Length: 238
Image 1: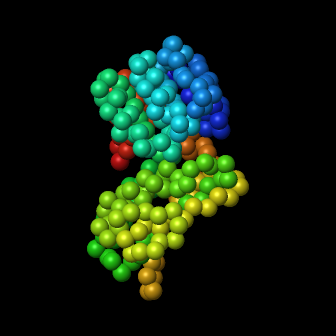
Image 2: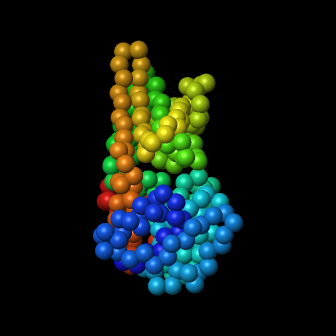
Image 3: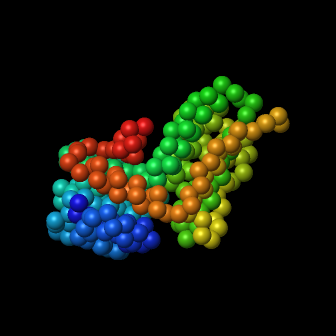
């Protein structure tokens, strides 16, 4: 497939390297920023766009891809206030958008395990649930997009939790998310249910960024020829 890379930071460069090894061709390497405007003509010849840019540019980049008739896989985090607007635009224009807060196959299995466990724990109010996420020091958003996806699934299942906080919880209704930034950590997410008697803990630990890269390329291969809005659960049939 012919790929337009929108955003050429660490993820963009790693996708570029692995795409070549897998026999794909990168036809555009666009170093997106909040000061740049992607022009539809730059996407000429691309079968699919993979968007890992910055929160300030993500929505407009997606709109441009849809205007150019190019399906877009987006992994930028920190812009979710506009995600429903982007999906609505894609549906209105008969475009194609796949958004995921994390493209790792392991993380998406972890998402499913988190949803299942949260449904069980809704009936066990003696357990207090809390989260921790650890990432490299260059990560700009906190909590991470993956942590927010996990948190939203917990909030949707456990009725006694009504909001999340990115600091120690001060009420029973808050879901505590503690964010740590440590050099060289690709991503760790821990969900802990505990009381005075025991604790139940599930976690996902990324050893490198390769899982994110392979997942993004898998999503790009899958989305070609489709219309509508999707996520990784569609790709993996979870």
